[in-house]
Image (tube, rainbow, N blue to C red; front, side):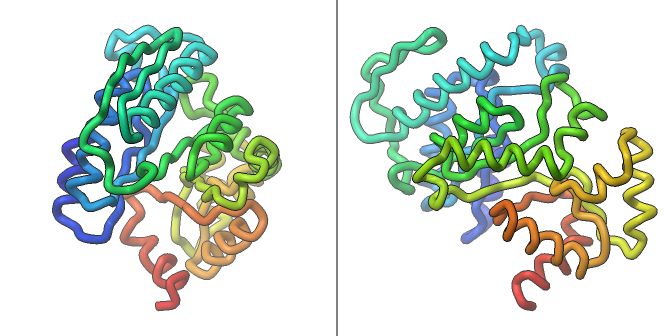
Length: 264
């Protein structure tokens, strides 16, 4: 995604850009930090840093990378996060962990945004959500993806009650940082339609899960423009979600929702 992100930033003047997310296993964190800092300089400070431990098993199988158990991937991710933060800070940086060793690396150029571009970390389980609450500027609440695919098991962890539990984990781990964290969610089921019930039933039937799981999930934005705006405002009030991501395939149909929220 790095060339695409640079192209986006080069051809815009106010838009912020970042990947959702860079899988820590794909690239050494020192190399990624260097690329991110350079993009931040070239864009005059418009980069966001999305980081993750990796979860989609097909990515690993197709590329021949070992798919370590979740604990190992998260350990490596946590070290990678520390390395990236160190590389983006001023002055020589050293780190010695189980997975990475850095000796006196002085990363240049320094990013325009200080102390660094905002870091986005999303998680579905307690451990990653807790890391995000302690370390990230933007915390994404995800489904639980232990199976390495999105199916009924993962979607059940996106139900309303499950999301409330995940947000509570973030609040508990963040402590005094909570007021400074932006809460994020990437919606998976987004359709602007006057036939909400029919659309919900169709999506639920394909997965399959009960209709209520889809209808009530904060990962769903289904209904008229008025209904979606109502749901977004209610979720911001209840869970703090102010950073909401929708897929590129719905940008045109979703534009009236953005316009309504912007007062246009």
